[in-house]
Length: 161
Ligand code: MG
Image (cartoon, rainbow, N blue to C red; front, top):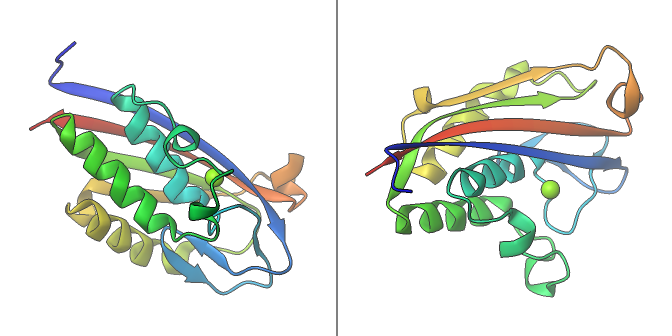
């Protein structure tokens, strides 16, 4: 179906680990722990990739960049998002806007939100006001509240070029 607008939803979870840097939204956040994963474990960029792929029914990040492929070990997720952007552009769509919520107990992300938005906008060749990044805690409940990991939820709307 050749719709003018297509909506997409993405969700990602990563576990905290002691021996990695914390990378979110393509930037390094000072914190004593990072996220476990085959790539750099940037859960925010992963959820955006999944939302954009989902909008065009192109599958998911695991289909395009399998974590069994050594090529993607430790890869910068900015490269993955850039590839996803090419895939959706090939389908004739560009990002309208995106809205993401990062759910984590610590660290506080407010000082880094603007830098993340700028970084994402530069990868997607769009304006910063098309990119919304928010953060919330889980009120000390569940795996997020227990600081075992984080989750990120993203929605996008893709617009026909
Ligand atoms: Mg992931």
